[in-house]
Length: 168
Image (cartoon, rainbow, N blue to C red; front, side):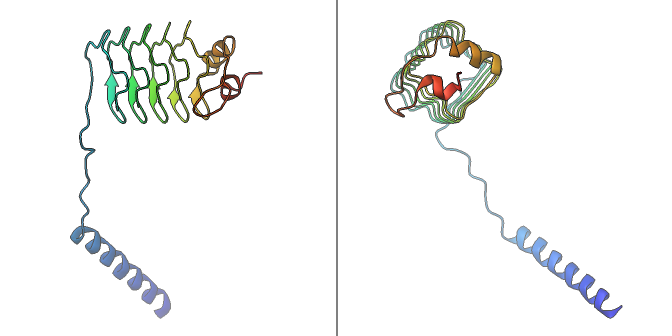
């Protein structure tokens, strides 16, 4: 009985010390500096070519005809956006969240989508020559449509578009 009581009291003391340590030693949470958000804005035909847009947020943005050629969009968030006929040739979207985005007619030639999340997005008539979708999460139906016109090898990663999409 004494052993059980001793263990219980030891546990209470350890938990109390841990709680006090957490309260007295807080670490501040740092917000990402220099973050730009393009939310609910019209960016039609804007030129973001060669821009460093890593971690930038584009939520519900109108981006028809926008030029993202060779842009760094790693870990960017593009949700509910319209990228009809946009130019993303050679853009790096590694780790990006591309959810519910319409990319119909977009130029995705040599774009990098490794480890990106491309859920509920459309790519009708998009040029995916040389694009790398390695380890990307993409809807099965959209992947099968992309496989119909997948061709080429990404010049940066050296990965075949067909292989990265898992085309048979």
